[in-house]
Image 1 (cartoon, one colour):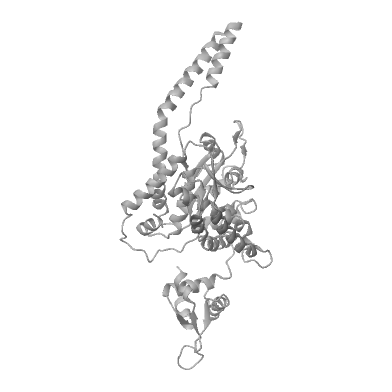
Image 2 (cartoon, helix red, strand yellow; image 1 turned 45 degrees about the vertical axis):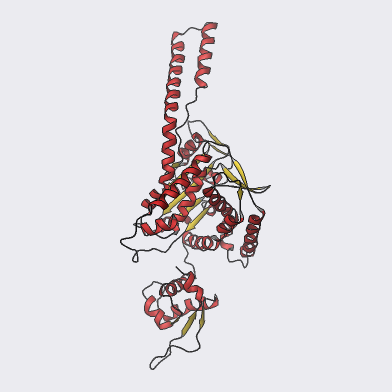
Length: 456
């Protein structure tokens, strides 16, 4: 489905991938969790943010991917509607009965007994909430109310970045309101106090968020008070894909009906299987645990505060193993909603996303910090190599093609970027320079085969 949507809508695969993960998590609605160890539980919540420029079909992609879950929501709401109407009418009748007794003004013992009985009947009349699985951007207070009505579960999907502005305090005089979103990522007890209204208590809130936002939205997050320090930004999976504008197929094949039908059926089956039930613990098989531990062992030295390449995003990286457990469990449930174990294959499939997620997190935090990565010129050269599928090239050739970019101010800037790639093992100096006329020969470099294979 990810590949089919990417092709049909001519968008990077990153966009549908991150949205699908959030949609699967919203389908589960926190009713499954993975007990990795006695003191380590992962709630199946996913927060994802794909940064895609305006005009690149974020809304249509979100609409087609979320349609099956919205269809489940509509069906559940229609089935619940008669009961809601009945209970609402019964509540109104009992409220009227209480008012009728009160208007009589009779304070006799029998009248007071009648009033107490009528009030008791009114208070025990429960009007069930219309089922909601998804919401758009909401204030934290509105989100808390919706979650309370839905048993503490909700999904938020949006092709805009309004949620971040709301959390930053758009409707609360600039005072950030992050507690609910922070605690709903891990199912922690949350109490929301509201002025002139009753307190909302959520014992195990679970929220899933899928956002498709413009890169500029991410760039402004560094200005959000406490966004980084609170751990909010560390809870998101990020994608900053390369734009396809300028190379899109203007007449792509439509979304294959069978692919869309299979995806819709799987989402429908998952959402209906778990809806209305209690929370079920899943566990990792021993081979799956071994895959997870190898990943953790690989990550650990990279977090070292002095020489680890992930030290500057250690807050995010520390959560990555747990995030991948969540992804593995969602892949498992997508295939079998009744599964209670996460197997080696699903854990391995999730683990293969680690390099991708790490690289995009590094780019996202660079963007959010307002700092340009010193390796960005090298990345630009690497992207150029991959696009051209070069096995060798000269400095003059690179300058000719890249001189229009803002960082490429002269050939020395090109050479500096190439030196970084040499240091990182992507390039090596060729034995002979590019032949040319009088003057300094242009250095020629050989390209590591993976640069062409792996570069988008």
